[in-house]
Amino acid sequence: MTAAAAAGAVIFRGLTLGYQRHPAVHHLDGTLPAGASLAVVGPNGAGKSTLLKGIMGEIAPLDGRIEHPGLGRRDFAYLPQAAEIDRGFPISVHDFVAMGLWRRIGPFGALRPHRRAVAEALATVGLTGFERRPIGTLSGGQLRRAMFARVLLQDARAVLLDEPFAAVDSRTTADLLGLVHRWHEEGRTVIAVLHDLDQVRRHFPTTLLLAREAVAWGDTETVLTPANLRRARQLCEAWDDTAPVCRGAAGAPPDHAHAGAPAHAHGHEHARDHAHPHDREHAA
Image (cartoon, rainbow, N blue to C red; front, top):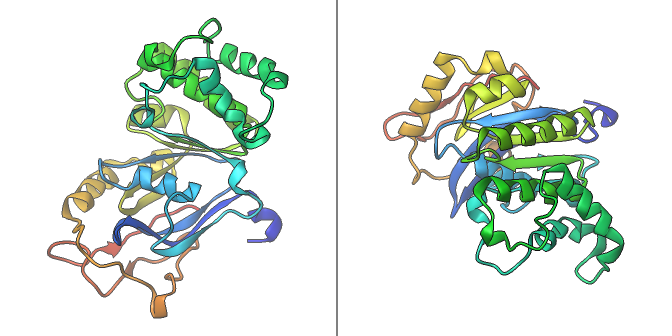
């Protein structure tokens, strides 16, 4: 890939992420082009949220690396799961949304010149008139709208969404999906962790099916087959969380980051009773 083609892409090279040296995402390889819209799906415990945190730099790789040439930390916006928001914190909807300006104005920057931008973000998500309400009084859907408004203010080139539509009503989901489509049309990269496979099929052209390792990555209809979904469930059921981290030769990540790479069987145990072959079907 040329430098021009790679600019703005997110590239995984033998990426292993985990906690206390226990892998949660194992030897992930592939390239997400700039401006792509990717759904990340898989069973519970498949490593989906961990992958987003790895991209954001909140978790350092145990092995391999993540590259995003031309993109700095400020070029990423991250919408966490709603459960990660402390709704008891005494902050108004206006100030919660205005936190999206933090990277632009800093902790001591004047907010007054940006009040119009905050108001426009709130209007975009349908929360005009909610400015002074404490976030603890919001419904689940209203909180999610406020979180999207905060992402809007970040004006980032890449947007990472962790279960953005979980436990919200259909109208809120439709409105927020409209924002996702808008970001994609503007050429921003969107990576969303999702559970609703019908929703993925309707709105996301590309999907990564993750089960600690990549089961399939490419065109959504090609990825979300019954055989691939069954394999994803089997891999998550068989995984041994106590297995040691494996590495490529001499500690280097395995060299199979290109599309159509052959399956690699590593000489160590990942599962309780067998070694996992890495059946990658990426479409870079």
